Image (cartoon, rainbow, N blue to C red; front, side):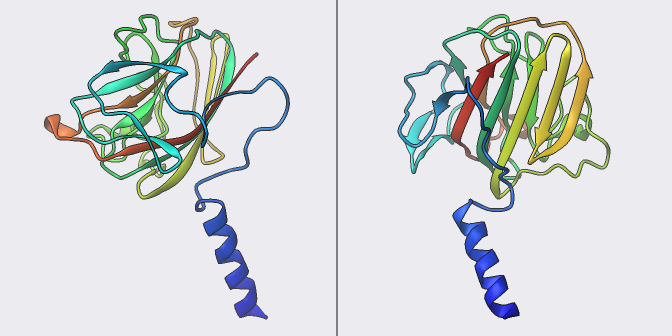
Length: 205
């Protein structure tokens, strides 16, 4: 019986894409921008990342860096996102970007995905220069599917990584704007490992 139990649990893990994913959001008002049947029609591209639909996800793995920027701006909202990264993937979700043509961590809140970031204070799960993660940073994305749940309500910002709160802040630098998915460069300009986004949803509050 024990063997059958563990086999069944293993099948569930495979079916749901690994331990990294939590349950998808429920309730009304959610708008899906990426899933199996949506390509890049909901996004504007900046930079030279080679974004494309592949294997049921939106993928980038080459270029000097780039973003998919939402066509709409948002003020108060929740984001649910499922993504695959390697340990040397440099990516993230930038929210409330004030300039959709020049997305940076100075002009938006950067919810980071970068397991090997030299300064781990703002590694995976952090909001760069706004909300640090506890050190040593145990929030690691590499080699599996993961989830972000991001909430921005007024000045209150909350990030959940794989269902666990990784960063929380009270900050009012950026009030509204589009959000962006990043493919960034690696350490010392090296090519970053791939990033894959298979589901991205947002709900205005």
